Length: 239
Image (cartoon, rainbow, N blue to C red):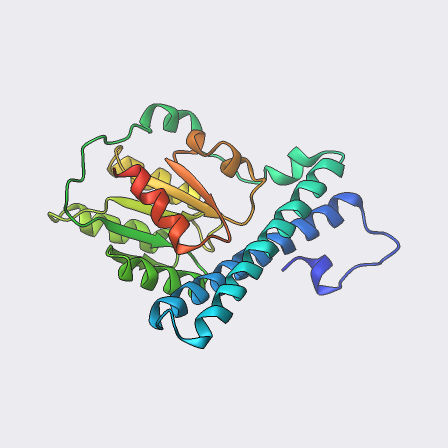
């Protein structure tokens, strides 16, 4: 949480850059929490019958989440439009291996046929991670989860020596710990240059979300998202 959000500031001496960064961070966190809410609504809908009275209320909650996403994204775009130097604030990520990744990022075009896809979902938000993994499992995928980049790299290395490596990584852009989402994918690309990865984030104006292929990702999806949107994205990658 930024100092501005904690209230540690003098209201008469807040620079435009500090204000912009604080509001941007708040909107990013809002989108992250909205993903958890929307995921739990999606999950609840799958656990009850369509004719249950609660189903209609869940549909209304889902619609409200989607509308909230529109307002959040509009706020981020307004901030970007009115910032005097948005690039210096939005493009915060340090890209250590971008030139190498331009050559490394080749994608496996082999058909997955009928075999079950094995996914690795990486997110430091426990609610988002556990809810989305349960939804993906219900949707028919074999899913493992990691709370940070180091755990994800270890899991990938373990799976790589078996006959069931991961087919797809779903990676949050801003992970806690020593490995960001970019660092995590960079490390795994060194193990398997054909691995596919989807970057997910509520920081929709971040450079890595705008130019995800340059950072080693195959595709992107903005938070918040529904399980149907995620499944459609996966299916488009493995027709």
